Length: 111
Image (tube, rainbow, N blue to C red; front, side, top):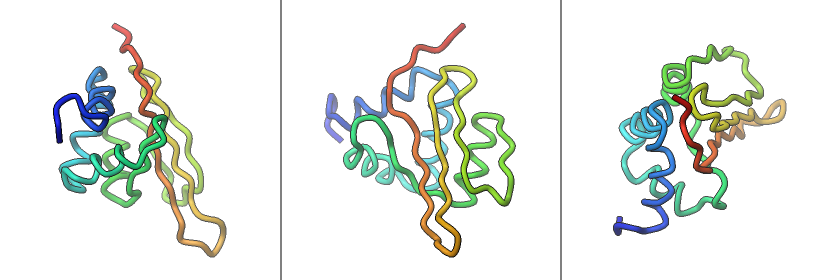
């Protein structure tokens, strides 16, 4: 990844917050370094669309302190530190399509 690249700038937006940087670092460990880079390259500039699976679910709980229901169909939360939004949407009934996205937008952490 080239220094100053759009991908690097996207990732740096997460580093300003301790919880969001923990989440992104953990996600990269779980899904590989290239997974976040690829999501950043494919992003619309506002959201990263990431893989939703059990490890991501547990990482989300550990990073942000939310308790997510097993029968979850929709969840719209935010980081308690910087208010970065993250959204999970389950597929329609009978569908397996699930999406998880997290805001890229830079937020300044509150002391």
